[in-house]
Image (cartoon, rainbow, N blue to C red; front, side, top):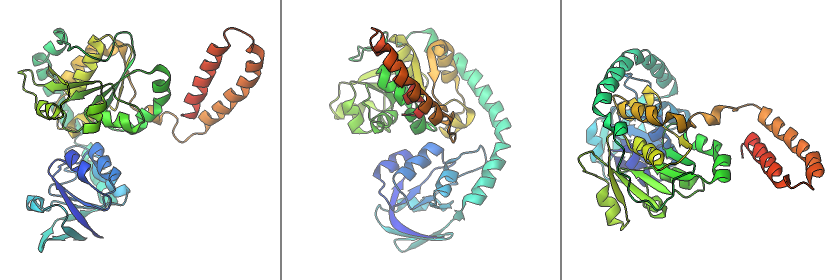
Length: 371
């Protein structure tokens, strides 16, 4: 394995991704690289990734390194944290296990797809023990965080109207891009309130829409998304501290601060629910143990409580993009619908309900074709 390119160094992968350019060598310190972080590196066109830590410890099946290896990105792990002192832009050369830059050398472990696949499979055998600890933590913290759902939030005054409207909450989680594309017909036809949780606001922009609201601690959302949103809600700790407050005030934005236990994802869902939005669709949400472990959370108490409260109005879009993957039947169904629409259009052209029927046919056709 041989790769060269300019170094880009970052201790937090999600912050580093914003600075990367095509052909860079990303130097990270990320134990158990998750798929969302790996996809952010891929989207920036990195040539290689050098990890001060290990890509896959085996504690649980983190899938980020597999994703990078499958795309042909050169990977070296366990080189040690001294490599994080490299300045940005210096040329880096990778030759198998050896990394050279600025007259220095580091020896790590070059890893490729077959080894990562085997390590990923072995990691699945450890999930049972992780799950036991995860459940115990969830139950313990659910008692402490019960006020999240028992006591209503103090809702700020919003520029966005929620009452009686559908809301779509976008989280930058696993397969969020594909699932956001899959619900595109729903977005176009119902014009729901679009709420981005931190970087989820940028996902909304990339899909061709404008976020109405951004909710989060503001550590992974772009300035552009913040400026375009009608409402910016900074997630604060229950004691009122809000690390993201300084940033939004420096941008001159009329942000509002809402203290709440739990995650920013939970806060966004609760804001939509208490504001009267119905239904609430969530895209890219964290729903399983691997999702939570990849985000560094040892339990899901707040998420469990939130979904317990709002589950009757919540629609989870996770996995929608996989429903018809690889088959031709949706296309054939679209052809049949289109053929049927022609004689029906001629028959009902003179009726007052023509526009309503045509709109329903058009929506069915677009959903069948995946438009």
